[in-house]
Length: 364
Image 1 (cartoon, helix red, strand yellow):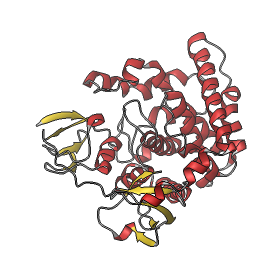
Image 2: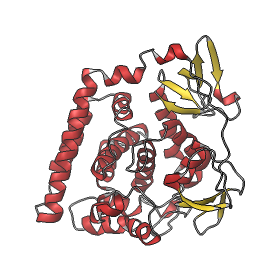
Image 3: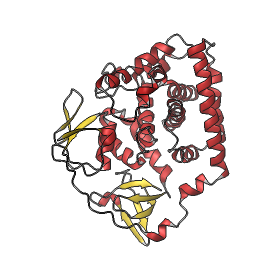
Image 4: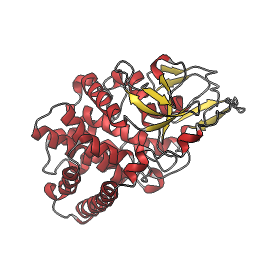
């Protein structure tokens, strides 16, 4: 038996001990469970930092060879990445991130006057060029290898929060507040040393506790800025969860600001599906499956349902690889099982909602 950081886990490893969620001792996995990529994503979702595994992992079954004709097919993702619109979005995104970082550092380190419009303008410029919400997600989906710097993550969460607020039919002022909350939600991480934030190996217990301070640090940074209290609350509460398992104050749903509830969904989705310093991006359908399995207790039910029902539609026509090694195209979303769409593989149609232990492992 050996302790492994979640960053080091691989599919096929066998748990040597039961795994529980936080000090509430909510059971998550049992001793002897064989970890899949979905299981590792769930551990990330619940902020479990390390688990005990058997020293000799079970050898997983060999992956069948992929459908070779599909390997040569130009995927929807490749078409998007080759488009003029994507190249322009990527350049605009990088400029937006650079400008946000420069302006925010001047405010925090050089006491430059806080100008909300100056900080928000690049975000709305990105949105104005991609007015269709599906178009924005098409662009973000294909930026997932972008190294997950805090600034880039904040831009992502601002864009996702803006769109989620639209899906929830918020009015113009509320959409603006959601966008602001997304942009500033992780400002506290800028006060934590890069040696911790960018660490590729296991965090010590003290380092993890230091990271958990970032909501309070962020709130303290902006509490005197001319921002809505909703935005300040979202910064403080974006790691709280409706079931009381979050931090720093273990609030429950009724105690949380509604913008904090919204930001928490955008934050976790982006964190799971973007590249980290210690891993590549997780498959969005693994993230969606995790939300379906566990999210309705941890997140506002109306918000999470609106998010999931809309986000899956942005992946229709994408080429995917299943955990069996087969490659196909998403052609239909199953409303009762959003993470298990119908896939066309050659001349066959596979309804993943009716299959056992078959799921989307990668979007190509």
